[in-house]
Length: 164
Image (cartoon, rainbow, N blue to C red; front, side, top):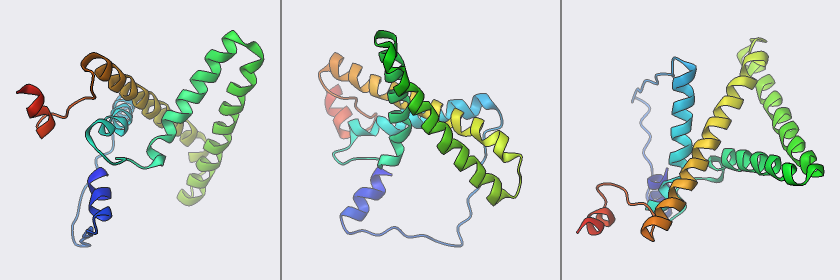
């Protein structure tokens, strides 16, 4: 993502070849699905440490904002009970968006069973991705506090200088 952004910003172009074939292997178990989305969330954040440009688009940060706002509102409601309405509002808003997206998938897929399955899939995807992104933020903060700087990617010039 970040390389494509830098390439386009510098006037380069991305070549798409219609005759290239690629295969996608879907995760075969719920555990693999959760682990994959957790890792995607972590790696939506860690590139901020390695890049001078914003390495992801805003849509990659939305699950983090969702998890952080829901978690923050829930914690706030423990100290200020009337603030529980905020956590409920966030949950209801997400539930409505999730239901609308699930209905859209069911209509496009012409299978009404998706209305029952997709809310769970979307909830697990966004939850795991958002929690992974929160973990990525914590890792960056910890690395910065511990080393006085951000993480260094293995094999980069910055990492080689840090080892020297």
